[in-house]
Image 1 (cartoon, helix red, strand yellow):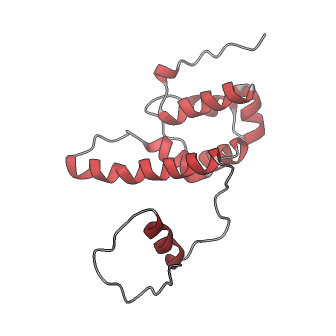
Image 2: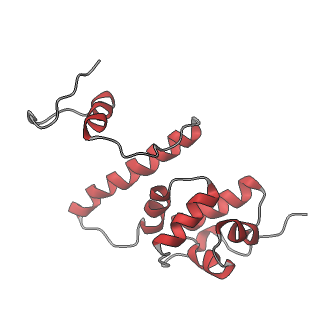
Length: 145
């Protein structure tokens, strides 16, 4: 019989809910994930709760153990931490976009690039996604096929 989790999703941050989902999906335990990530179990457990602030190193270790990109976990860790003004709320769209990109890539069996992506490659990808240029840029010359 699998061990019962004592952490409730309602008490968790978005990162914590993601950790709980990973544990449930893989059939692993909090102790096992702590061991695989090299994070002390109390710190890993604490990172699940609302209002906590895991260190960047904790997030990198956890991302490696969970097979996820560390930026995805950063986005989850800091989501909703600060009350947003209407202007800042629009900036939240970037966090949502990043999370959706990583989620979709993982779902279709893709991994994040291991090398930095050039501005030209990013521009091409944005155009393919439907972004429209608002001004003529002479800095980046890319041939779109």
